[in-house]
Image (cartoon, rainbow, N blue to C red; front, side):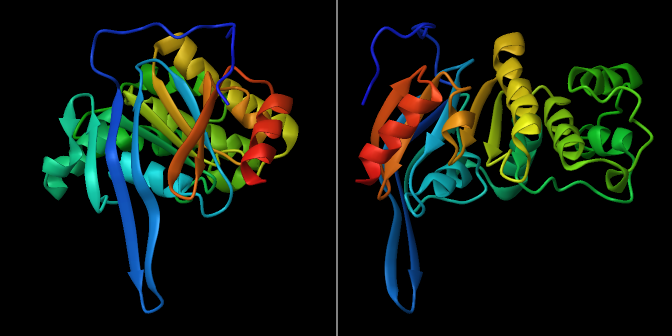
Length: 255
């Protein structure tokens, strides 16, 4: 499933990857029995790459993102972010690492309705004990096309604008790895393209590593590489594919 002649070939890096998954297994137990959401996933995300993770419902893609971001603990295996093993951290240290080294954007915007756009964006810095610089907050707002919206509250914005606030909030700390879980799932096609362009620019402009879970081949086409999961395992990858090739690969995988 791997493509040939990519238009933007990956650069082989001697430094450690931004994110490493080594033999990740995740088993959920219930009255109905054990369910293996991940079954030994090993993969490394190079620094400055944009990877889309795709698979059918139940393939393990959201579980992979949760474990990679330290939001859930794998049953077995190791997750390393920037050379730091997440499993070796206590909850305080893990929370600190997430705040300083990770950015998150989800389908639900998770904005605080009582705060202005400015204060929502500045919040991650305040949580780390840093005093937000006014120029930094306005810089990221300009970067996501929200100039003039700083004093608005989330309820006064469209869905696309609220997602841009969420992206600005994730960018303000300069995270090493940017996690996005179905970030365009609730948006129309035009607004989705704008949001995906912002994620693409996060990689191209600042060298951040983006890991995005999506079911949409159009969204996945913005990535450098698509990683396909099936039944909790890596089933293949596709470099620099367009939406048609990605959709065809998904169809082959599902059949």
